[in-house]
Length: 198
Image 1 (cartoon, one colour):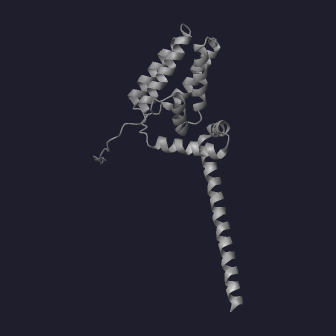
Image 2 (cartoon, rainbow, N blue to C red):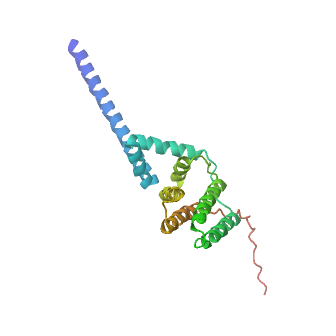
C-alpha cells in the first residue's frame, strides 16, 4: 500500500511539472508574439524605446501604455473641406520659405500642432505628443523629433538655412501622414429600374 502512495505522488509530481512546463512555454510564446506585434506596429520606434529605456521589457511596457492611452482618445479623420484648408495653409507656408525660412519653421510647427489638435491629439509636452503619434504613425514620428530638434537648434542660433529646409521637410512628412481624410457619409440612393420603351 505504501508503494501505491509513492507511485501516486510521483505521478502527481510529474503531472505538476508537465503542467508548469506547458504554462511556461505558453507564457513565453505569448511574450514572443506580443514582442513581435509591438515591433511590427511601432517599427523604428520600438528600437528607440528599447535603447532609451534600456530593456525590451520596459520598452514593451511603455509601448503598451501608449496604446492604451491612445485608445481612449477620440482621434478623427479630417473632412475633405478641412483637409483642403490645411493643404492650402501648407502651400502658403511652403511658398514663403525663401523669404523667411526661420518663420516658416515656426509656422510649420504651429500648423502641425493645429492639425494634431483638430485630429484629436492632446497638446501636452512634446515627448507625450510624440509618444501618442507613434501609436498610429510610427514611421513619421522620427521626422517630428528631427524637426523639433532642428527648431531647438535654430532657437540657439545653431541652424543654417539647409537645416531649416530639412526641418520643413520633416514637418511635411508628418503633416502628410496626419492629413487623413474621411469621406462624407453617402446616402443610399434607391435603385431605379430603367424602363425600356419600344
